[in-house]
Figure (spheres, rainbow, N blue to C red):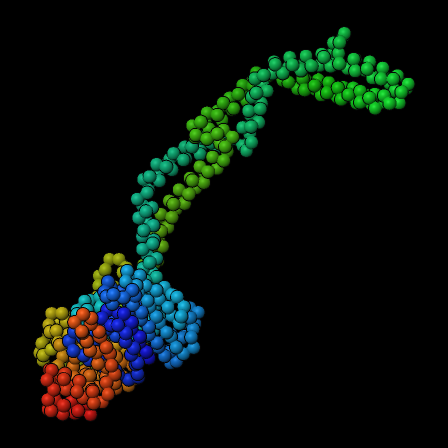
Length: 554
């Protein structure tokens, strides 16, 4: 339950602090005093959107703070623990809004995103606004109220999951079908390219070898001439060859070494040189013999080398990258084949998803019909307590013939009502007056409040359009509701205000330049005067005082 509310520089409020208590609290005040100012402040604490006039004129920022006792609220305790915001038995929410509209939010002193205020708010307070009776004329709201009463949250979450999966699959199917023609054309091109590369079958590093073989074969005559010239210089020239001259040098240095030991290392170097030249000469002879001038072999090499360059040029890649390009094209083709296979299988996936969706939708529909009957009986009973003795209420659950899955199943929910004996049941928006809508809305809200365990219920002028004996019945119902939960009710009706365990009075003061709103807890004597004012419409008389005392005593 809410225990404390602090409001600073909000709208026309300079500073107000309000203590809240168990049971039923009523809020009254003169027209235009801002009776809903506390409710609006609580709404902002719980994540409502801040408007341009949120900050009091002349102030830099508005500061709002609400404290909640959560000793008995296990759901809120669990939420705070999960989000690492635990503070034992209390939950303190604070929101600061600057005049530019930007805001900061805090839970138990920790900065949090606005979405978390909304999330924890759903576990702390349920606010019923003065325009809720207009909403119940909409079929979507009628469906929501029934689902809330029947606690269909798990079924609806399961339905949403199947619906999301169905949307994803149908989007994928549409994309695949839209791209089918483009994919066929791309597939034909890739098949041609891959087939050409498969037939050519160039291996890894083969082009580099082809390039080397091509150069060697195309320059075979030059290689033979150069190698012959070197061999001749090494050993075959009769008059002047390298080996003969080095051998003569080696012999001379050998004699030099016998005379002077210091020349021995030089002799060793020359001997090594002789050995290396002999080895080089031998290898060069072997190399020369390996030069095979075979026009047929060279033609084959030249053809494959040229083809590799030509295909690479066609594919706009370097020849040495052709093998990798071949692999990439094959992967693209395999991917297109996979898309075709997926197109064949996705219809089965969609059918399975629709079947799973339908199973949940049927289960939801059956449950709606069951709870619709129970809720209709309760609403009819409640309406008769609200001075509508001949009212008959029903919830029609119609199996809609929807072609595609929706977020909320196949049912169309419709509130039907009859106000007079013998009158046929008709849609609520066609036959109910404004006052009747208010009573129907209030009856539903009270029934839902009894079923949904929110610690605090706020009713913001939900008794609009109600008066006389009906107002007294409304007050009694709200008072009964306050026995088990905290009820806060903004009202203009003395019959409702008098049923509160405590009463707050909102007043507006002005000095001609500035306006201030105050909220005060009324004493018993002050309550009597305020109830009398509400009864008399302004001028308080002895009769209105007596009537007020009678209402408060009842």
